Image (cartoon, rainbow, N blue to C red):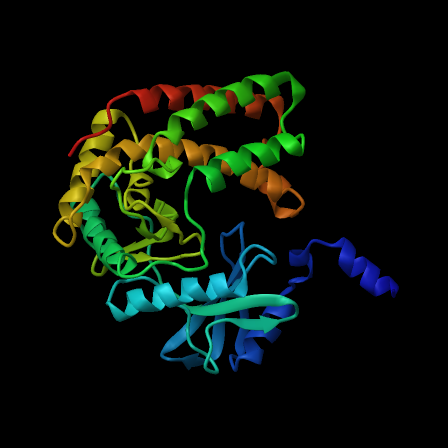
Length: 341
């Protein structure tokens, strides 16, 4: 083995994704950058905005996404692309990859990547009920498409994948300091037992329908413009789950504020699709699963140099004591009556 090969193997894959590699990847699909390249905010993948010498399909700039090696299979990525194409066909404002050389997924330098048109916008004003109603209408349209057929390769958002597997991985890899491990494990197990008796825990006969979702519909994944409304970006976490998964991350503040926000979202949603009120009881279980999964996600990605830089507080005893307190709060929240609309 050559010294260069040994050096390359010792690096995290993204450390060899240099600007030259990005520009060469774009050139491999017929896109010539003019030299302006900007890294966009993304931790799971690497995403770059590139300006082109010649526009493609009317776009002077594109966004290139380089998928994290080993996370999704090619079939799973292509299923995400197919879903985004279905949304675009249904005139839902979701940003879909461009078809270049007859394909949406490309290979270069050991990376899988896609290229999408650049969309401008800012985070939506979630205290504005008109904005929330508008977003609700388009979420319903996403779900109309999502309910038309199932995913065949992409996983579900459920107790096992987000909760049990995350807990087990953290404990098996000794990621929790010993002084807090017992308390965290106790609270985590208590929370997971409560979730077992819900639709996302696999409870039979719940009647709640699982459909294709955006999956990670937080405000940062919605680009808002006053004249066109929302554009939904980054379907990288598209999974099967209950429709309310795409609503609850847009709620914030005290209960009364969340109640108002939810009411506006559902008002817009039900102009396009019926919303099952039974799903409201899943908001806190879903929030709890995300909390546990988030810690495991950070720990699993710690070998990526960008994570210690951007999350320096992760892994300390203080962090994990905070997680114990948050789990206790979620246990209490799951015992409260759900929000109503």
